[in-house]
Image 1 (tube, rainbow, N blue to C red):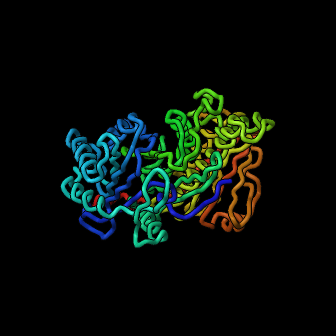
Image 2 (cartoon, helix red, strand yellow; image 1 turned 135 degrees about the vertical axis):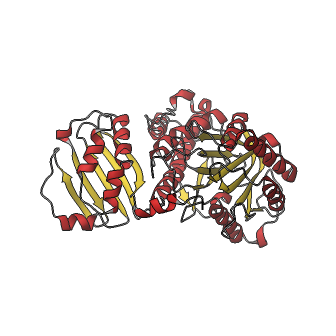
Image 3 (spheres, rainbow, N blue to C red; image 1 turned 30 degrees about the vertical axis):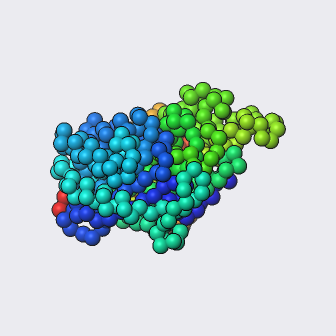
Length: 467
């Protein structure tokens, strides 16, 4: 069973964090530099932006992830270190070198991430000094095991968790709320944890993961297996989010697994499957694979390695989905200037690809998003977006229902506009979470996308973003 717990990114064993303000942006008082460390080199996998214009930290981190191990992460806000040429890459190298010197880790195992304005160079001297300062005040939770028992913030676990929450705030730019979650579950009789946080509010149409995201875990998992699993879940969570249709230059999501929970390594071999049995395109849900494996081993004796591996896999898949769906939904609801979360669920589709294509078309439609903001019962905009999506369906079979905490109302029935109450529709469209259910009546597949309304405030924020 997967349970949500406290702790954020410090919920998992063997991680520490610190953040502070070094003055990357001239205005404000928010912290703008964060340092994270794993007590032991962790297996690392990740997903990155598909934007051809990739920021220097993306290029650097792709090499770190390809190396397979990560020991530390440094993150700055305020400046994206994108469109910065060779100097931008050199600054990534200098950041990693500073972390290596301060923490005694391999430079090639240091991830560097940046978010903010595209174009300027980062103030590398300020960041180097900040790294040195942060290395002296890293906060972690003590534990026994392969690492020594260590002191932590004021001798109080709650205060350590507060520092984790401060880190979730420190990576924010135009976000209005921090986005963090932690879960606890069992694998092979060992208690395991995943702590995660992300930032993202504008320039969100990920095509990979999220703006910046971090999932720190203490499980033991084989790297290539973890990479495919991550991509599969990303496709059905973060890649189903859109705030404004813009894919950032800096999108990065990394998953670290340091193995300190002590579970037996989980891999394709231990499950008796091939790596490509995990569909990293997401078109086949990895949760279906987990169920198939648990069903296949259900008659085996308790403790049988194959049965235990299947149970562990099912637990891990549920844990990852819990974490990523929460972060994806929270990111969508915190879209720049947003007043309500807009969820699009396509059901009754002949296949998942059709459902996904339609859901993303509707959630990214500017006209639909504007209608959601205005609480305008103009379901023709939803129907229109479905029609230009490129997906094949019979419009004469389609029902579209709008739902919220105030109830539900059918606004397209078998391809036509039925009679409905404008007053009732206004009431249903008024809460801060609104869902459009689009039923094709042509199969059993479904897909969900998350977005938000399009407001005047979105334009205001992005009209003077640099200032």
